[in-house]
Length: 418
Image (cartoon, rainbow, N blue to C red; front, side):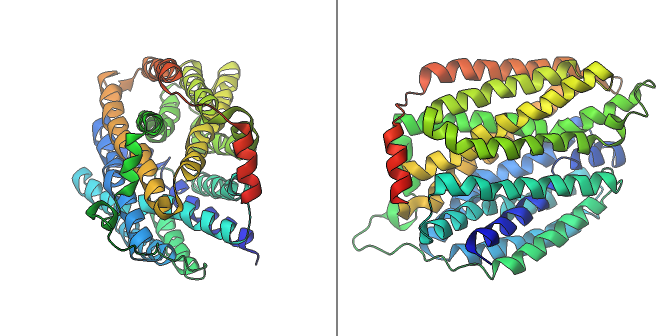
């Protein structure tokens, strides 16, 4: 197989694992195990806690000591074991610790998979801005197929979703052994402790542009956690209304949510055009506005004919909201850092998004959901409007605080050199 085909399959499995449980685990814990909103938020916060440290740490290890593809393999072996055990857990405290172990080793693989892809593309003489998004699309396809598998098989409220994720993780670990070997950075003489420990990426915070970028990456990471944790339970709750109990939205919520990932495919392919023509600032502003629309449409959507249209529109704008922030952000970081700290910088970006941001988002969103829950009934409209207001404020502040001059000529030069 050509290198792009091999990278597509790696991306497919990477996100198939996540899609098997990320969207539906909250419903499983609430409806089957009886966890509260805060308990579900705490379990999901394990992802944030792990991502505060592990992606950057593993990026440093990959840059300095262990080849990225071997480290990637080891992480997925451990994840497979943790997910398999999580399927047997029914206590919220134990579930938190088991999913924390899984997160400690899964979160770094998101950045490591980017590192592997960038290296292989560069080695083949291909432009990352142009060629990486179409490869990353297959990760989204994997996420969608996983969601459909879980939903059509009736496993959204079952622990079998975790067994499926464990099996996919083990398969990816074996497959990654066949990927090209990525060399570690050459050790330099007379390097200081910062360089020896691989903490060079943190120097990026000295640049005002990068400091603001990472700050908003963290704040948007909280938004992503909110929709991942409570999007599926929100749709399941329409079943409490007898008029909607037999609707397709209630029976197959993951199928509806998968439209979000389908939209991702289209917006991922649009990233090279928008990033080269308008630059990272405009692209991220569009993402924030899309998040506002995502939550606003959720607030007024329901399984009625008109309400279903609103829900579908919410799924479509999610594709823009996620891709224009997450994928474009990773490419932006790739362009702004030197090659010897590439894995460390990608790990730092992942830490801000899926670490600090995700932890804050999980805890606070759980508190908001419980606060607006009366006698077991959640006021979803108020909940979603609060989140919509949050993202709108972010967009306004970002507009006036992130100073970035887009240079289309630089993007063209980058494409030629790659």
